[in-house]
Length: 394
Image (cartoon, rainbow, N blue to C red; front, side, top):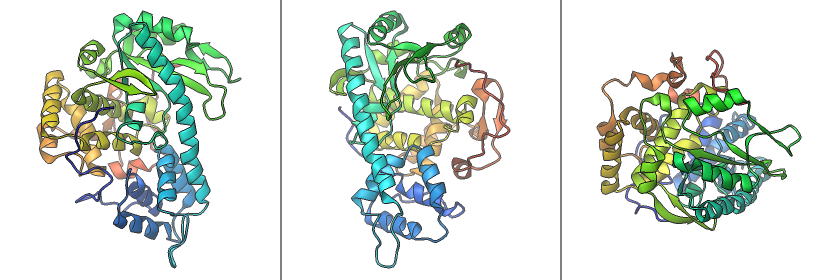
């Protein structure tokens, strides 16, 4: 796919001023160093020093790497830099095969998704359904340049609401059903009428389309159709029809398709990150804060030059999405300060930033975090005490 020329230092290079992680446990500090597509010599040395500590909890590290969807990336680093081997008196990663297998296994899994979703793109195109691929393979084949690095759960597609019936016909013909995979792993059970009505009235997405995968690594294939990159309760709207007019043709999964234009693509990632980081449904599932989402955004932002940043800021102003964009870029800059220029942050920064420590607003139940950002990234019990989501999905 075509991406913008890289102007900012990529989030694989040494940042000028990274986050202060001194208060975090060793396993968290190690994961944050590894959460880059490329490591320089100094970062490899830092990784080895942390990995050689006697007080590093490897169980906690594996848990955190899995929760933050970084195990495949860690696995490639382990292989590339031979981190499983001792370096002098410094011990290497224990059970290095666990990490390298996570990488090769994820690559095999994503290639199965590659074949399936390529067929979806081709069939939609042949049926005249204009669509654009969000996240997923546009990142894996683009910024990551390795389909094994990023764990992909589904394919998210922007589709005009008027095209939803035709898209439904295509997906139904390909064996998809709007529902959930039953316990037997073979049948997709349709959603209840209550759930269907709630999603139709309150959310910008169609209920997910699911097909049994019948593979141990791919129990199901999942296609999400989205009609707006913002949630209805956010007070901001960017209809798919507008974004599709600016979308760019590309090839993903071996098939002709489209991706949002650069400014829309980054704003979409900002909206997605903000939604999941602050919504009760994702907090309940402990997937609200995942380092991989900040890495996605940082990689795309690192490819921006001044002209693209100007377009992005104009788009943010057009949609009145300043607070959402600032939320995502602010926390991304905490982890990857080299990826977001200071003047961009200043341009979208609202007068009142108290909302940065709040969650649940989109659910109608605003609450406040008691932990700082870095601490709550690794606090597995942060969902305790939060209100429950009212989004049905049965």
